[in-house]
Amino acid sequence: MKPVYGTVYLVGAGPGAPDLLTLRAAEILKRADVVFHDALVHPDTLLLAQNAEKIAVGKRCGKQSTAQRFINKRLVDAARKFNTVVRLKGGDPMLFGRAQEEIAALRAAGIEHEVVPGVTAALAASAGLGISLTQRGLSRNVVFVTARVGVSEADHDWAASAAAADTAIIYMGIGQAALIAAMLAARGVPPATPAVVVENASLPQERRFPLVLADLPHIAELGIAGPALIMLGKVFAAAKKVSIATASGALAALS
Image (cartoon, rainbow, N blue to C red; front, side, top):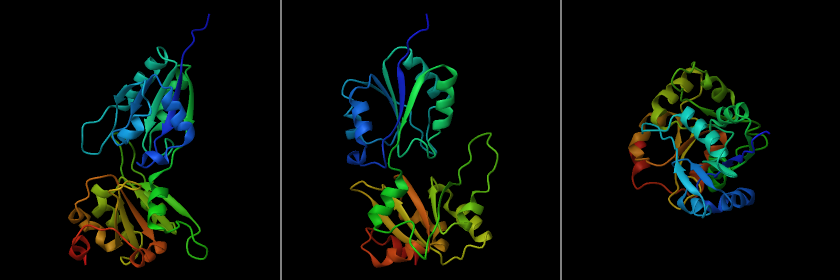
């Protein structure tokens, strides 16, 4: 007789604010038996899983992280013990969330699984700015990229995609901002290209810094500690005309 296993749900926790969680995600969390969650998931989001064991398996750049192969094994093992297993990921599971590796492990083990989408940080940042990522006559395409390359991974020419796009959103790029600026400049992106750095999108402590490409090597002066996006393109020229919350004196240091 074939053994009966539980279901693993790869759930998007959204950009940070708990009230941006989808209704389906909230419903699954309420009946979860165990939740394996990212480091940046809001505590109030975790409170929805009142009856679940909560296990942190988050990854933060430059800090100790849980190996992906270990997460994969924990998900498979949990499904053999519990009915409802949740892998709770920041943003959307299918965008820079390594979901495919977890899906592959679950498929190989014969475990039922489902992906529950979430709001990705770029959309929350765009909403907070009040600036559409696409605009008629100005931006007809958007690219989401990351400059980070994992251990044993081949290099990828992400800069070619970013340079060719009308609007480019760079995830996990704050620590590589100088390299990002240099690579985009080498691809012909003008130094005066409008840019915005958005930290802690959707949260009360969100900060937004209107810049240009040439400012990126100086991002360290902004004192950014939370998760942040680098957003580039002509659409962000409007960022200087809207109400922008910035750190006191930070932009003056860049001008």
